[in-house]
Amino acid sequence: MMFSTLVMQFNLKITCPNLRGNILKEVRKWIKKDSGIVRSNMGGWHSKITHEGALGSLIHIIADEYAPIFAKAMGWQLKDRKFFSEGAWANVNPPGASNISHVHSNSDLSAIYYVETHGPEQGPLIFCDPRAGAVQSHPLIEETNYINAETIERVPQDHDLVIFPSWLPHRVALNKSKKRRISVAVNFNVGMVK
Image (cartoon, rainbow, N blue to C red; front, side, top):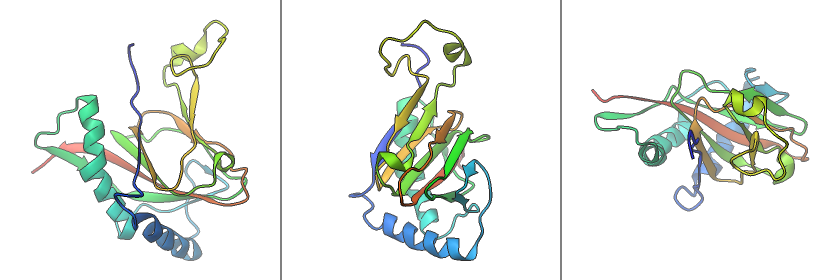
């Protein structure tokens, strides 16, 4: 196999049992006092970037415990280096909302933590093959698999953490459930420790 793309998924329910509840409480308050901003969200709410509160705690948990696992699998050098983040933001997708295909530019690593989910109807996270030539032309596919798929879907659950390279195109399908879906995203760069 050549040019594989690593995506890792963890569930933080046992290791960080209070994180979900703390973030949920903050996001509920935040939505009431802030109209949010528009980025990739179509019909949903996107917060401003922050390092504070429960989202700040999430940044530290990922940077200290989970991003290094990804880095080791990728063979990245972390000696005298560590993960830095410009901050985290919350995404709230009510019924009918989605996120258009995008990448997280100017970053090395991205992560999404799922706070409130509702099964396959909530709109899965869809990763898109970044190799233009691979999706431009190919014979008919008899059976889709991880090698020939143009997109790969993940249906996250509460407490799931998905980590992937920031350059990997992704989107969120339409929320067809009757409840809102809440997630928190974070970007990281690897930098020298002073």
